[in-house]
Image (cartoon, rainbow, N blue to C red; front, side):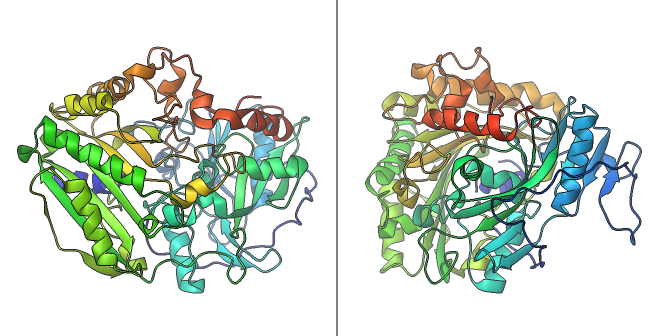
Length: 542
């Protein structure tokens, strides 16, 4: 068994959170009215406590080593400067300087990108959004305004404590809202309330026109034409392609009394584990199949079962156990019985399971539950791949999972596959209504390797790559959209999808992420980023 710190992190991979305070935000520009291009100014290194304006950090500054890294310790950039702006005008000013100086620019919110899209040697200017973290109510738009630098933990805390509402988002408190929202976003409440981006009303963004001038625009759900496309692109088109989002407006569609949903007052929480010593190929296969079969039968929108969210964490045999974590809205009629039936259905024919009794907790307290919430992600190196499932697992995929997980993983590091609940209200939305095309899946998977030392990079990355390739061998090593699988999640970017050595399907990476929505994303890219200022290995191409 691995140390508890590492397993604490593992318990929450892919997964909803705590804390935060409200900050009054500056007014947004009028909807559909771009501001005038922002002039360029000289850079002033550093900032005294009494000086207003952006903080600029360069090499040699004590802050620099921390600000050129994100959460994934595999990657560290070497930019000429890291700019921490305090408002959208400052973002535009420094983007303008980068463009005029022909310097590659990238944006960081929480720093949780799985690949080196920001911490990249080609990036010379990093815009760090962490000072733009306000959460407020915007009466003009009847929506909640959230700065792009806010963490999910702060957003949850502010929305709940100030107004008693929430967004259906993820389980990692340090994830930044700026990069999370454009990916679509999902979490434990999504089967009931849909994706996070389904509640996105508007996005304030800095964009750059064809002559290199930056401006601040606001695009909303109510807009049509080019502005409507810019809003739509932020509902699943991925980050770093169209501009720099500085603030988001949240207001649920078709909501009369409240602009956002209320979370449950209380939830039921339960963890069940099966020691690997009690599993053989038959019982392991039964466990995986049971989990998939239950989701096939219980993922229709509006059912009580859609208030249940679970993760089945298939840790490699040297981790000692396979674990199931479950959360259920306690207000569901007969909630305890619903939870018991779920656990019984997943456990049927598998053998004796171990676990603590069901806990009942207030919803906001449950955000700190170790079943979903990671504890120490910033000391890890990681490689992660994803897949959507439209149906339960076919026998050949189950057999591949058994082959890979029943053999010990790398000597140093932790390897696993997590299977998370999906579907429900997510699938009530037409695939073209937002940029998130995956609207008929029932589960979402992550193939995960976590480790601490660079010396172990090759072994752990190889395990993740070869496991993924084995499971999807019938479709070229990737989860091509068919009756069973439905591509990948742009929120878990994986540059291997670009590599014909690991993607032999003939299906390009962008189709695996965006499917039939990609042409509209390309059109938005041509309109809003005609110079391709905002780019990385998997940004939308013009």
